[in-house]
Length: 87
Image (cartoon, rainbow, N blue to C red; front, side, top):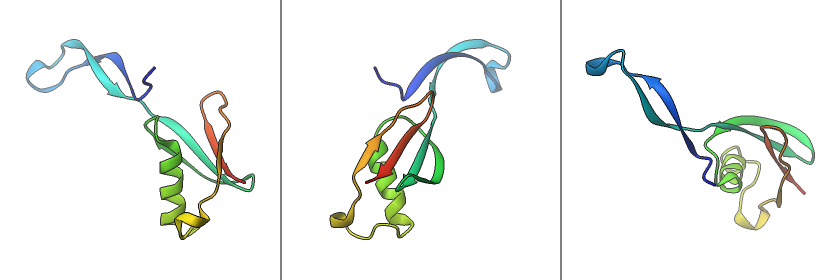
């Protein structure tokens, strides 16, 4: 099942002001990144490609420098958060 978007009733603005219609909305979920079990950051993201997002963030922050030093990531789903840890 694709969790990146969902249907919802919305109130239109502009030319159709006041009209209630069905629309497709982007979904957001938190992604927590941990280093050796220590929380580093939480960011909101559209579901999907969590590993790439986490590795891109770690690379951009200078925490990892080359592909060879990329950490192994493990998913730990909880109620609404996916946690990625280096190990």
